[in-house]
Amino acid sequence: MIQFDDSGRRVRPRQPAPVALGSSVKRYAAVFGPGLVVMLADTDVGSIITAGQSGAQWGYRLLLLQLLLVPILYVVQEMTVRLGIFTGRGHGELIRDSFGGFWAWVSAAGLTVAVMGALVTELSGVAGVGELYGLPRAVSLALAVLLLLGVVLTGSYRRVERIAIALGLFELAFFAVAWWAGPSPGAVVANAFDIPWADKDYAYLAAANIGAVIMPWMVFYQQSAIAEKRLGPEHLRAARVDTAAGAFITQLVMAAVLVAAAATIGQARGTGDGPGLQTVGDLANALVPFLGQGAGKLVFSLGILGAAMVAAIVVTLALAWGVGEVAGYKRSLELRPWDAKWFYGIYCAGVVGCALLVLLWPNLVALNVGVQILNALLLPLVLGFLVALARFALPAEARLQGPYYAVVVVLVSVTTVLGVFGALSGAGLF
Image (cartoon, rainbow, N blue to C red; front, side):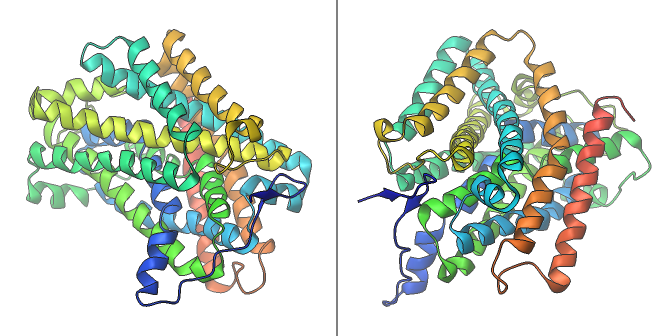
């Protein structure tokens, strides 16, 4: 029987680590999921467009950055792993208990803005793919909403996780897109290290890539998912592997999109004057002539749909979990909708509301730009709370300390500064 404490948190004994033959394999299989899902969601429609723009404007000159972002992704999300495993609580609840209700609601407000912006972006991507095949926006959005509601309203956490992974794996289609684009290995290597540090436009796009790596909903989702699965300290190593694998895969997908754009519409020796790519339609219209109207267009569309749908599931669940952790209502995918009305109600309202916004709003590009700027400006708050919790809210044996703590602070500081710089320069303030 599922029980909840006074704060709405699910209570049940932690699952013991398996000890039978093959226990390591079983443990890893049981633990894997939250890290991989959240990383696949990180490669969302906005990130794919950013990678495409990077390749179109600068060839392979931003390729090395995609690989350098792997450890940054891992370091940030590994802190959420520690917090979820050693406290058994979600991010919003831990902020509330550690810093008070005011700051918890501030974090929840930031999460809400970030989630709404991300969900609009994902559903815009779905609508864009539908339009590639002549499907009216209302039809493609309705199908997406039905799928998103059906996945969560009829499933347990493990079922939702498996469906999210299955959808996210469609992103691997971008490896085929990069292969079909026919990049020259010599040009890739030569231009990857030919970095125009002094060019302001290059610096802005590099900052945009860095600023898009860490989103508030990623932190909330993975910590809440770990708490939902009731993982304990004995699962820490497997959870870290899950997170590392996800970080590696998601940045390889970003690299594949960049390579495809660079090998086709980009200029390996360009000057930063490549075409502007702000929507799925822009990217598709630029790539399809090189990939073909048949299989190439289909594979590209599957990659976009996979990225959009897994991200939509993750960001909306992050909102429902995060607000619940602050407000104290019951929040678990193991409960039926009538037993957790606020949890499922917020999920449904987010999906349906953002779908209507995508359907009716006349200028989604301008809306997305504004949300991305605000999202990057939230990095100091999000990462500041994360580091503080990892330093002070964990038991002594698990908290950040020593040289690793210094490395984390440096990486987080650089990511925050560059993300904020990218947002402000994009707003014309630099």
